Length: 347
Image 1 (cartoon, rainbow, N blue to C red):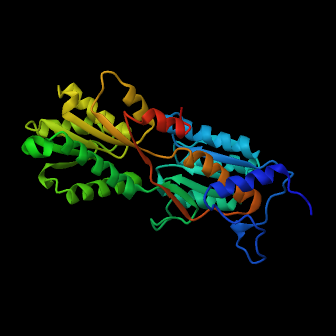
Image 2: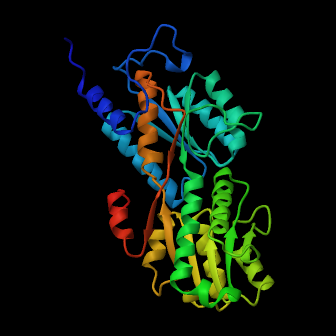
Image 3: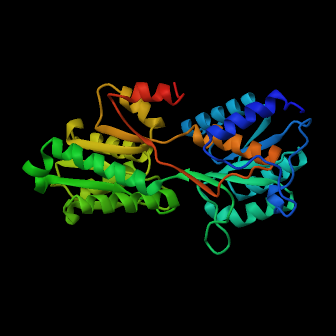
C-alpha cells in the first residue's frame, strides 16, 4: 500500500476536527464541477482571503488564524482588502492570475454575491463565504458554502442576559417607570437585523414593557449605530434614569455607553451587552469600569482557521464544505474574559 504523505495525514485530521467539512474520498465520475478531482499534491495550493476592513481587531485575528491554518497544512494565503465592488472584482482577477484555487470572502455588502460568484466561476475559483452570506440577483443566498453566525441565538442571548442583570439590580421591580432599553439597530447588515429581531422577541417574552423598548437606528445612512443614536435617544427621553443597551456589535454598544457617560449618566446606571467579544476584551480592562456588562464572544477561529482549512481541503482534495455552518458564540464578562480569551487563542 502506498503511504500518504504527512501533509495529507495532517489535513485529514484537521478535516475531522472541523466537524464534517466534506468527504475527502475521490469524487464520483458524475460529480458536479465544484467536486472536481483533487489538485496535484506536488503543487502548492494557494487560496485568497478577502476581507472588507483588514485593519479591524476582528479581521486581524481572523487573518492570523487563517495564516496558522496555512502553516499547519502547508498551503499559501494571499490576503487582499476588498473595500468596495471594484476592489472585490479586481481581487478575484488577481487571484486567478496568481494561480489560486479559490478564496474565502467576508463582506457585509452581501449584494455583491451575484457578480462576485459569477466572476469567480468564470475564473474556475471556488468560493467560501464567512460571516455574511452572499446573495444572488433574486436576493436569496447564492448557494456558496457559508460559515456564519447563529444570529437568532446570539440576539436572544444578549436580551436574556440584559434582562437578568436588570432584575438582579432591582431595576424592573423598584424602578420600572425610569428604566428603558436602547436596542441599537442596523438593517444594512443581515446579521445585525437578525440579532435585533431576536433580541426584541426575547424582551417581549420576558414581559419588558414595549413602550420602554426603543429600537434606535443610526441617525444617518453613513453613521455607525452607537454614540450618535444613543445621544438622540437621551434627548427624546430625559426622564429615563437607567438604561439597558443592546446592539449588534460590541462597538455599537460601547459607543452608546460613551454617549451616556458624556451626558452625565453614572456607569452603574447603564448595562450594556454586546456581540463579538474582541472589542469587549479591552473594555473589560478599562478602569474605572464602564457599564459594559457582557458580550457574546464569536468564534473568530472558526471564521479564520476553520474557513481557510475547509477551503484548502476543497481545492486540494475535492471535499466541498457543508452548505452552511453556524457558530453560536460564548458569553463572557469581567469574571471570565481572560480565561475564555486564552482558551480561544486570542491572548
